[in-house]
Amino acid sequence: MPSTSTARKSLELSAAEIRTLPSRGEAERASNFVDRYGIQITGTETVWLTVPAKTAVIEIVLEAQSMARALRGRDLVGAEQLETWSKDRCFTDTSAVSKTLWIQGFFPGSLRLALPNQLELLRSKGLVAPRREEFVAGAVAGFIAAGRSLFRGYLIRTEQSTFCFGESGLLELEGLNPGVHPTAGIAASLRKSRNSPVM
Image 1 (tube, rainbow, N blue to C red):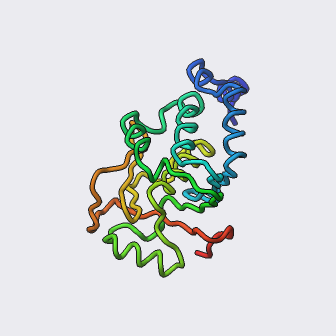
Image 2 (image 1 turned 180 degrees about the horizontal axis):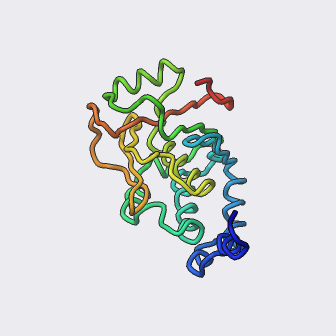
Image 3 (image 1 turned 60 degrees about the horizontal axis):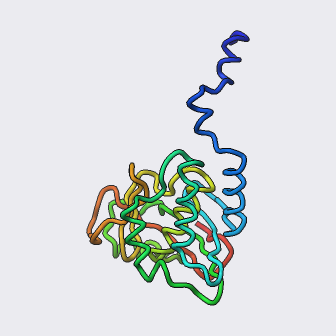
């Protein structure tokens, strides 16, 4: 049985650890972010969120980026990637109605398959691959809400692109290689129902 002094030390935070804790104001900002976008983490790689009417995905990304360093100790997205997405209509367009998304950042069993086979795997489960901007919205929502990526350390494909989460944050890789890659899984989406799919 550990001594009292050992137990006390295990409960103490170092000065460096204390400096990385979010302030009350930062924690409240994150809580408001989670509430405003209806974010729910329902599994290790799974997130629900709502993109409100007249809200562009890039707005969600920029808001998450503004909190990430203070809240989680690192940037969420690199500056060059943010600039690219800020000029991409997939990320800047808005809708007249809100959209609720279910995003699974890594779909089990999707490694070591070519993209057509990954898409067929999703279809066999009644799922689809999310669009690029949908996946990014889910990824940044999950990072702010849970403090981790949804990737499990893999490259993640959507139908149109491939993403990774590295030292500089979330990155969309140029070019989509549809062939077999040992560390490239695929993300899953369920667009038309608020109910979680049966896996």
